[in-house]
Image 1: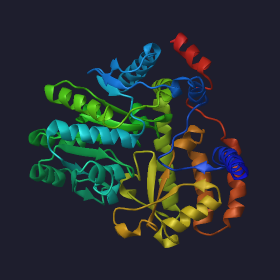
Image 2: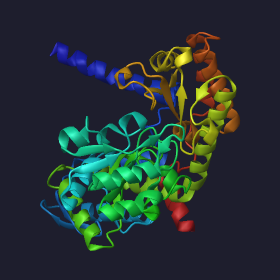
Image 3: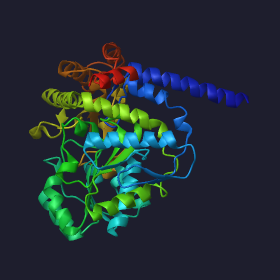
Image 4: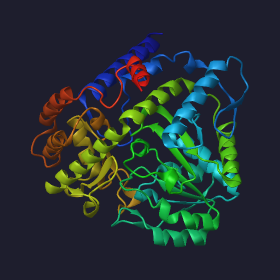
Length: 445
């Protein structure tokens, strides 16, 4: 019992230290992390019992509860239906499924469902080295779990984007069942509109992984994939979309082929890949969607401004920021080639020593065996923007980063300034401070 008690005490202690460290003491710039508002956190606290319950079963073509295999569902079904309809309304889709517990789960169900619907196991994807998520790749979920045959889009490194003309040739030659867009290192809108016709020509479903940019889409600051030709959006709900951890799939089944695809995706969710679907997050998801409805345009606009400001400022101060000719980015993140200062692994660690948290990242021209020490950094701006930082604050932060990168000061010295800066930006903007505030906003509307 002594060892068990020690482990539990250590667990509690580490949890408390983490909350203090990452929330109160660090500048968080990992592009795959989001920041929930106090109201969203409060809604999670309201949902303790809901988080204990099960709701296995089938949904209808609108995404609503059709059949459940447990009792006690009357309010749970309402909650799921309301959360579904809120997401459908926000993203102007006719169908959504909010049962997914992550973005990877959303990809799993969608890729499996679309391969069943098309009876075709070939999928055209962005190369992993050029920004695709591991779940898209033959080395990850798509290949090793689902057994899909991956064929790469042609990627133009100079444009930092898919080459639409050359990818059209690939799609015609491969005749895949699925063509996928989106990714993790994702600076510019993908050519969905340009490639939709050729996807239709070969009978391929179009999937768009919006995990990183869902909040920018909601705020009208990136691209609108469903209007540009995507059949389905898959996404997490906790990156630029600042909700609780979870996933979602959305689309509009306006043809028999799309209706068939929805039913296959639903089958891939339950019974194939989910039992408990973590219902306790759904009320908080609805509050996050309300925040994006009201504050999303301003938040998304400022995120992109901050990312572009950082790209320009770092570039002007001798750091190689990619896609300079295109304004560095149109999303929440920038990509930096940091080889001349020691490489991604070294610089990510020294910045962490100064309490600036970001991640090393492979760049499109890197050797894939260099995963442990890639050339690049991926830097995200959604967290610090929601804390309230504007362009002048971003430049100050970049100066602190440059002090570390160029070894002008030791990380421990920079850390002191980071702690002072964090104290100025410890709240959460572009959201509600509590659920009552959200209700008052609705009542006024």
